Amino acid sequence: MKTIKIVAAFVLTMILSGQAMAKQATEQKEQLVVPLSEPGKPFKLNVGLINGSIKVTGYEGKDVVIDISSDDKRKGDRKESANGMKRINAGNGMDISAEEKNNSVTVHSQSWSSSVRLSIKVPMSESKMKLSTINDGDVVVSNVNGELEVSNSNGDVQLNNISGFAVANSLNGDVVVSFKTIDLKAAMAFSTLNGKIDVTFPAALKANVKLKSDHGDIYTDFDVDADKAAAAPTKSASSGTYRVKIDNTVYGKIGGGGPEVMMKNMNGNIYIRKAKG
Image (cartoon, rainbow, N blue to C red; front, top):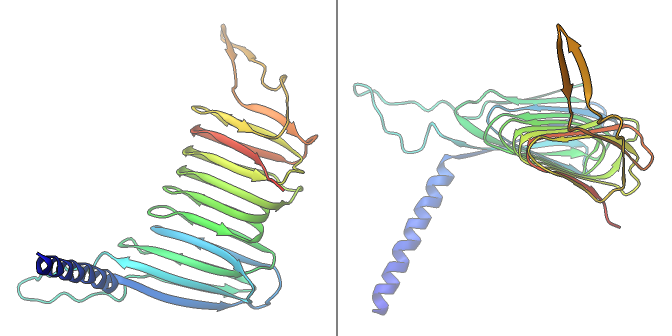
């Protein structure tokens, strides 16, 4: 009985090892190091993907470092032949380009056949970023300072410990944001169709808020001075038709008011949190 257990364990180990080797065989990895023209000064980062995820993290360095990985779905164990002809693999399945000009870095991929995962380290200096993906991945940004514009069609948007201001939206995913500090001079907007919006602001937030969830609730631990007049029914008459419309948008002020913060959700809750400590 003991011998059977040992053999079974050995077989299981071989199976798992084979699976790991097969996965490793199709996974492609590359790294691009992009020097900035003027290190230490404000820079721009523009990333656009069709399939894949984007992760951006601030670090104590001067270059933009891009780690790329991809599972090439065209390779695998395919053994098709056409009248005896052999199939030739086309490169590593990753169509990635990165260009830098005047402290502006542009990264994009045209790959439809494989999902690309980008892990990007950026300097801690002030930045302006525009990040987008469509399928098969999330967008995660941590510890950056400046202006963020982020969109994701089928995945989450997560912005962690950021400083500055942000505009973030998803069609099918959560939008989760935490601010270290905010730029009080800029308006911000957060939206999704199917997911939740969960934003944590510094306790000293001063903003005019515009909040709407069609099929969800709105929660906050800030004191919100609601503008009841703005939410009053509107009346109109045209061609003998009289119409009364009630808008369920919440208008109000936090901390006496300030720049506008708009949050709009169709199917999900909205959470506006006050940072602790």
